[in-house]
Length: 236
Picture 1 (cartoon, helix red, strand yellow):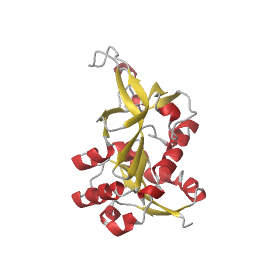
Picture 2 (picture 1 turned 90 degrees about the horizontal axis):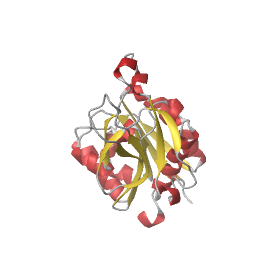
Picture 3 (picture 1 turned 45 degrees about the horizontal axis):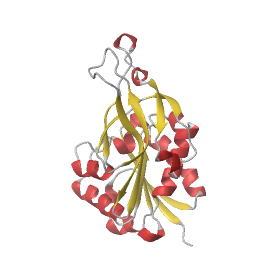
Picture 4 (picture 1 turned 90 degrees about the vertical axis):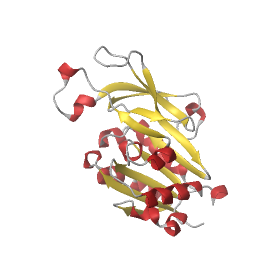
C-alpha cells in the first residue's frame, strides 16, 4: 500500500505561530503513515495535478489573502476527495475577502468576546475567557469526538457565523454579560465536519496558542480529524 500524502500549508498572521503550531503535528502525520510536504503559501492550491495526488490538506493560514484560482483549485480538490482540516484562525479566520472559501468551509470567525472592560490590560489575555466545549449528541458517536467528555478551556472563545450544511460535533456558548450588546446567550459551533462532494472537512476552533493545541482533548480532536478527513478509498 502506498503511503498517504499530506500537504501542510502554513502562513498568515504570525500571532498564531503557524510554523510552531504545525510542527506539533508533523510527527503524528508521519507516524500515521503520511509522507508530508510543507508549503509556506497557498500557491500550490492552483496546481490541480499536485492536489489530485494529495490525500489531506492541513491548513494553518490566519487572515491573509488568496487568489480566486487558488480557492477554486482547493475547492475542486476537496470535491474530488482530498481531505481538508485545520484549527482556530488557521482555517476559520482565513481569507476573509473570499466568499468562495467561506462557502467551502461553512463557518467563519466573527469575534472572540473579551473580559469586562475594567479587567483588560491591552494584552492577548484580555480575550481569554473560561468556557466549556460541549460535545453534541452527534459528537458523542462521531469518530472525531467519540469517547470525549465536555471539557473546559481558558483561551479565545470563537463566535462563529455558519450555515446549516455543517455537522456540529461540539458547541460553546457565549453568555449574555452586562457589558456586552447581546441580550441572550449565543451558542456557536466549536468543532464541525462538512462533506463537500467526495471530500471531508474538519474544523476545530480552539487552538489560539501552543498550550491550547497541546491540551489532550484539543490535540485528540485535531489528530482524529486529520485521519477522518483523509481521502477514503471510495473517494479516490
